[in-house]
Image 1: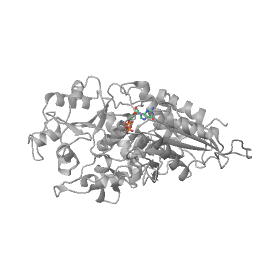
Image 2 (image 1 turned 180 degrees about the vertical axis):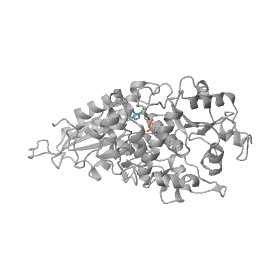
Image 3 (image 1 turned 90 degrees about the vertical axis):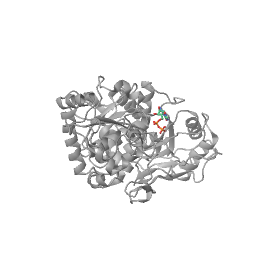
Image 4 (image 1 turned 90 degrees about the horizontal axis):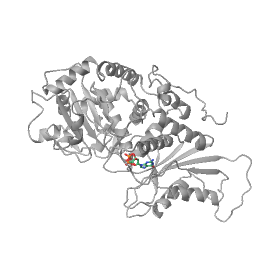
Length: 478
Ligand code: GDP
């Protein structure tokens, strides 16, 4: 059957190497048990320790999830404002913030933090996250109940809030030897955070935070690399992820299952435009320069990268007629961008001229939304669809600094070719470079040695936490 997704030699595994729990209802979330039909095999199996920790997390979440007895008890503690010693369950509440790519990375970060600290992750979906993802944990929910005590205050939480941990440290209201702790703290881990907020990444502070039943986190960053630099998490992280390059790859495929609506968008597009090609190439264009484009220097860079690295064939500009060879190799290029200019240019190039190799190149772009929009459901569904479609390619080209691209590369298990960020509106030379690992970059890491209480280069402490290819001050796992 030509229209079915490509088969690969190895037997495929519906539960992704044991990552997925087998007990979900299939119909309510088709993508969960169908994704293996569309994906290549993962380049790496999850560790058996990770699998056992996920299963015990699922039990914990079921026991402590919304409206359970333990949950209700811990909410009472929150309302009272007092912290009278340990609770049965403790929580990380994730607040929805920033673009969808950012959110996916921060949910994964918050989940890993919850796993490391035996907390339960609850997400506040905000106004525009309905119907994007399935529930990741069986027989419970990760959605913060609508009646949650502080829900209407979330918008006002910021660096200067009275319950912000960094702010309390700054004003000496709390310190690591404080005995009477509050029942909740707000953790400001947004890119503009200050030295006090960054104390989050210190062991001593983690000991204090461990005694607070409710932690409410707002962040727009994949802060996982810095968790690997906290000594008390080191051993556990090593057991969970013997190979550090696969942290988001595994957590992402465990947590993020497109809703049935989004799965329809993904599978229809895949079947129509990508399934039949011999090879699939993803090109993700995100430009952070002012003005909307298209810009010639970006187009030059796309061509310089894909042609020089032989990801796509050159065309014969002089010839317009070609005799087809016997069996022509076909390649499908899926481009994503807020605008359609780059896609039209590339598509026309392969329409107007034959390729030197005789390969047939189809170029497709699902949408061009023109600008980033907030609080629009279909806009977010398309963004999620496109990240997912990019993750189903064989070869991926991404743009610097973009979490949209990080999500695609991580889910796909792909080391992308990264288009370097243009400076002064000129295509950089070389135009692109192969990533060291498929991990996302932490854009705003702390540069602090908690023990020595001095600044250090946190990208030079251990072998597996390094500076990113696309952002020299960022940190990533390799
Ligand atoms: P980042 O800003 O590149 O790190 O990625 P985010 O996903 O966090 O924020 C960018 C947002 O802009 C996306 O979530 C979409 O709403 C929109 N966007 C950017 N590029 C694209 C694209 O190629 N396709 C679609 N559909 N939306 C995009």
